[in-house]
Picture 1: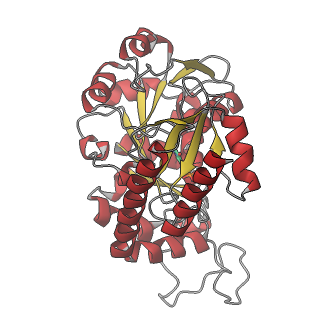
Picture 2: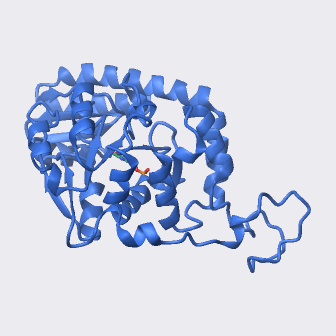
Picture 3: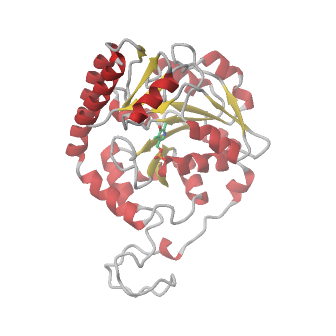
Length: 349
Ligand SMILES: *Cc1c(COP(=O)(O)O)cnc(C)c1O
């Protein structure tokens, strides 16, 4: 695909929109001794009286250095959820276009499709939790976007590299690869291949490995054409000042973050081994994420019993291919131990 193909996929109104120029578009920073009487802000400094940087320049610079991706290929959203919504609005006409999702997968793709009145063509994963490439590509001409979540939530596995490559090279629309959990895997990020695939959009988040779910900071990595288009349609101040500041601070501590990721991966291995020994656990699926998907004898019953023991997990048994499955987030070693003990207790009662 070429940039011209991408242009052809965009909605006409989006293409012709001129970006909203906010007062804060022109400023660089407040340290330069200028007098700012342009944005109707309260002049009395309390640390929050000014509008935030609409371009999140400092945060983008930091992310650029961390990920080796130029700032013009980065868009920051109020969580990945906002980025997904922007993609729908940039590429899909309500009541006309369709997207492809591959259940069981992250629920927000379907929610946002419904919200934007876009048809969601569901092509279930195969029983080994890998994409059904033939069935996806058979629908290619009908869909504007394809959502690939790898490692996938809730199945916890990564998709095979060649499978993703086949989809990237043959799908005739935008391919969104959601890498929310990639830091917990040994997989290479597809972000390093952006220059090869103009239709590739990689989504990352600070909500999982980076420990900042409360900040709502999502990261979109794509061609400068796609990024500049999304930039035009995003709300100007979509990432608030406190979040930008706190995200920068968290990103200073990369060594600490890596230690946490290692601890979570160790906890995952240990917990998986322990759960495999529980008689009513039928299956512990291999995980590339910070959670385990397990099949039990009776998911609703086990879910309720865990709640009684003050442990909350996610019952995913209504999802396709996930009959009697629970999704369990890896906690601290103490929390994992408590879960493991709870399972052992349930076994004997
Ligand atoms: C948790 C999660 C996210 C994160 O969403 P945010 O809005 O950035 O918090 C994104 N994608 C998937 C698949 C997830 O499971």
